[in-house]
Image (tube, rainbow, N blue to C red; front, side, top):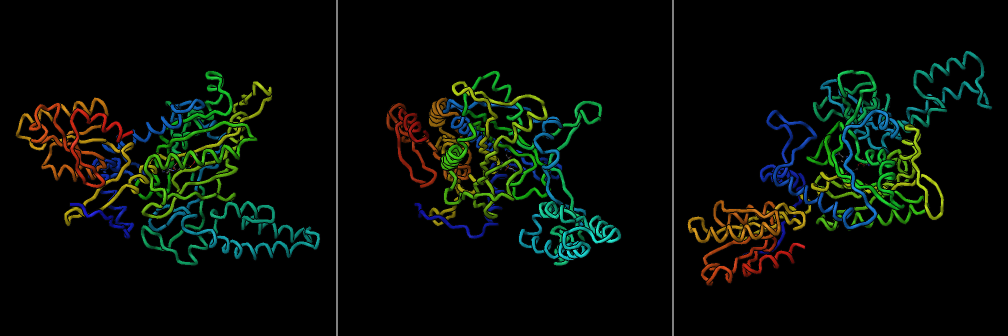
Length: 524
Ligand code: GAP
């Protein structure tokens, strides 16, 4: 009997460990290269993880491409040349500020070690004596008092890398240079790896792109990168899509694919990865419609989140301030999720304006425009970008679905996955393995359901109770058991199978001939 209450997990660390161990033990997600010690920030999806992932991708394509008339699917190359990624700003600017621990050699993001408020006060203190000294060498009109003082001020400026004019630059790059080190040493912040205070004197930019070399020569023309976002493949194909498909504005290009970021501190299982998968849409619009389109896509992203079974109480819309937005974005709303390790980004929605098309047009010396056939107006379309990380989606789905309850005094674990994303929709079992007529009939039912619903599993391991537990843990919403009653009720065609429901553990009997209709209704 089921005592239907859910145990609230108050120990989030424990929950995270349970999700990781379930993922491994039940064939969802494995550490890549585990046999050789593993690779940080890279994971392989096992048999069930691959099914879950494919279900999500297929639903995404159905919702955002197949069910619409304004969307084109793309599958662009992962390897990109240096020129487009220089134009997009990634070669120069896709970097994190990083400081090294000289004791153990690990590198850490300075903006993770020091928060915004701390950093501002450090900079105020650091800048004050320098600014005072520079100002002291100037007269009331701001000109230097004499050549000697000018030189002195200039050497001071050079030495400290600060001046009135580049103070703004310094503030924007405050996590770089000497200041992070001064602060970390002053508060004796220990390295989380070796527990020592041994920070290098300067923090540096660290480009996050994975670089490679094409062909045998090693000159700069052969330098290439694994794309840091799928979006760039869409922008560089804008002209091809216009010339081949002749779309009318507004229209979108959707792409699912791998992206690569050499994250300094990959962490939290599949949350911050070095090899990740994105589902991105670049939606091309007339600039004057951007506000309405932005709101529309916000709603679409919420609808998507609900459709795949995310716990909507754990989803938060966060408006990203000007200083924290990516260089290309004029407005960003992040959808953050309450993961077991805290509230963090799940999806992002950005208004990229005409930034990308202008940059690629300039660099490639090609017009990337649109001519409205009715108004006869030519302009560069603006872009709204709903961007959804697939791995983070999977983590949020697992965290939403992980449930423990109690049945007959025993703790039971199940994944309350939405049937649309569940790896298997149905599991079919013979009650016993030693009665040929039961096994045969179960096989017949299995074939019947598999032909209709695809992802149906055959499970005859252990006893029925154990099979239910196993299917609960992998989130199979329904188990069908063919038993003595199925055949005793006369001819098999008129018999019933037992259907057991994952979330309630309740059972009901449904005629074998009715199973397809029954599941069509339940799974649609
Ligand atoms: N084209 C825009 C773009 O790439 P982003 O915020 O850097 O923007 C978009 O990434 C989404 O990709 C994020 O909302 C997140 O879901 C996912 N993502 C980004 N970096 C990731 C990482 N290191 N590991 C896993 N997912 C990541």
